[in-house]
Amino acid sequence: MFDNLSDKLERAFKVLKGQGKISEINVAETLKEVRKALLDADVSYKVAKIFTDTVKEKALGANVLNSISPSQLMVKIVHDELATLMGGEQSELDIKNSPTIILIAGLQGSGKTTFSAKLANYLKTKKGKKPLLVAGDVYRPAAINQLIVLGEQVQVPVHHELENKNPVQIAENALKVAKELGCNVVIVDTAGRLAVDELMMREIELVHRSIKPHETLFVVDSMTGQDAVNTAKAFNDVLNYTGVVLTKLDGDTRGGAALTIRSVVDKPIKFVGIGEKMDALDVFYPSRMADRILGMGDVVSLVERAQEQFDEEESRRLQKKIAQDDFNFNDFLKQIQQIKKMGNVKDLMSMIPGMGKALKGIDIGDDAFKSIEAIIGSMTHKERENPALINGSRRKRIASGSGSDIQEVNNLLKQFDSTRKMMKMMAGGGMKNSARMMQSMKSKMKM
Image (cartoon, rainbow, N blue to C red; front, side):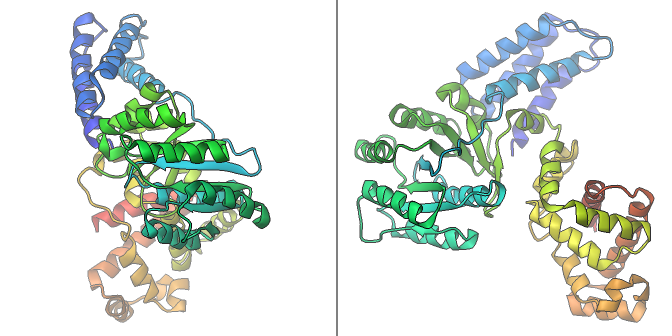
């Protein structure tokens, strides 16, 4: 995500490294590279020029503190302007009404149906809501079936009418069903359409007018770049939607849509999709995204994800075991499983400052822990509880049972032993422990 843009911005800032002060010449050289980086990221020329002109004005008008180098000052100014360009402040979803009606719109293939299910899961698990999903795509039976399957996956009811081809009527009926089921959020998935298709645009406008949604979210594939921004404008002219959702931000996106869409349609980005799993949905924070673009990581989001998985009682229990040198493979496995719930491993690692660049080009899949789990799964209950029992013959049996070789088993045992010693030496709260587990993850990638 944004790898190319991050690299090019980093190279741009190198122009100022070693410079004693900000000057018109070195600022101009730096911003020339910044502008090229933005254009390569598929940001429109107009937006890129306004951005660099603003940065130049602030850089030349700033008083450089003795403790801050020109390059550091430029990074800060660019960071702040990137955050402003993407909206400045995080925009909350308006879910105060009961029921809250949310209409999902977008092009074909943008990921609307998957997002609808992700949003339902997010509102159910993190906001304590009781959502109802509505299959409003009357043109693709596969879309209806997909929503039904995803609804079952996140345990959210789905209203669908296979024989009804009137999306307005389906949406109106769904509001009645929501009342009967006691659902306080209604999420209406609609058919994908082309902005130039006047008939389809008229249809979604009628749905919008009929159910009067509290939130209308425009879902856009972030990999389509500047075309996504143009489409967003066309949809906004018809629907005047309340927010934007960027999907596939975990893919090979250049970032133009994320950087420009707010300035073009003046609507906030509310969510970003970062994977296929139902929990792979993040609230959009402009400042945090600017951090990640500039290679600063996103520690706040990492901490928030960890807090969702590591409860205080479990942290205290684990801390006590660590202090008593009683941390075993059952605890180790539980920590791995909790980390896996936090999201894609590479994405998590990239949230640690400096790790994004270190991980460039390294393929870390969702199955990064598979061999570790297989090895631990081949241990007996006693071996998990007391790793000291694992001698040479036991190692051979564990390797054979897990489809690993002796070296992999030995590496894991060494890694586990060093992790346990480190955790005892630096015993702290659950978050600290999870951070150390992240370092263990990094070691595993090198095994």
